[in-house]
Image (cartoon, rainbow, N blue to C red):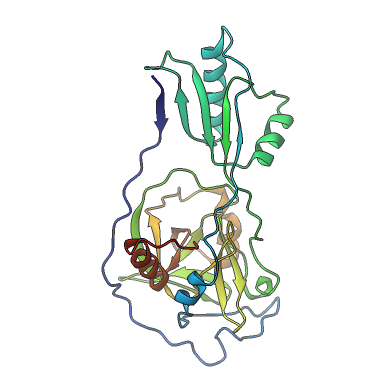
Length: 286
C-alpha cells in the first residue's frame, strides 16, 4: 500500500466584506508620478480594472510542471537512500510531500514532490556532487519565467520585498487588507494602528499596466492579479522571525515598522469574481 506524507493545509476560508476606509491618492503621488533614484512613487489606492474581461480573454493557463520518473527498481538499500535524500531535502525546506511504498516509516520512499524547479534541483545536486537515485521519482514546480520586477516599475520602488525561495506548504486562511506603496515602500493597512511593511512570496512580481498603474503579477502565468493600492486577499497567516536575515535590505531602506507576510495576494474584487466563476463550474485563468 502506498502512503503519502505531506504537510497539513488549512482550508481557505471565505472572508466577509473588508472594513477598510477608501483613501484617495494625494496630488502628485499617484500611479503616474515620475520616479528617480532620489524620489520614489506612492500609489495609495487604485481603481480595480476589468478583471472579468481579463479572466475571460484567454484560455486557462496551467504552469508547466516536470517529473523525473523512476527508471530502476528499488535497490536493497532503498530505505537508507530514501531517508538520506529526505534529510537533504528537508534541510533546505525543498520537500513538500513524499510517498512511501508501504505502511509506516520502515517503507522505502518512492517519490518526492518539491517546491523547486527541475533546473534548480539540478544545480543544487551538481554543487553538492550528488547523483539523484534512479529508483525515486521527483516532481518539480514550474519555473518562474516572469521577472520579479518589470522594467517599467524598477525606479518606482526602493526595494522589492519578496522571498527568492519558492513557496512551500502554508496555511490557507483568507486574509484581507489594502496593500499600498508610499515613498517607494510597500505597506499593509491595519484596522488598528499604523501600517506594517509588506513581504511577498516569490511567485508575485511587480509591473506596470497600460494605464500607468503599478500592478501585482503572477510570475507563473503573467496574469495581472491586483493594482497596488487595492484591497487584496491572500492565504495566511505567513509568519516570519523578526530577525530573518532576508529583511535586512527592507529594514535599511524602509524602516523598522513590523513586517507582515502577505503571501501571493490578489485583488479582493478578483478573488470574489474567481470564486463566483468556480461556483458556476467555469474554468478560470489564474
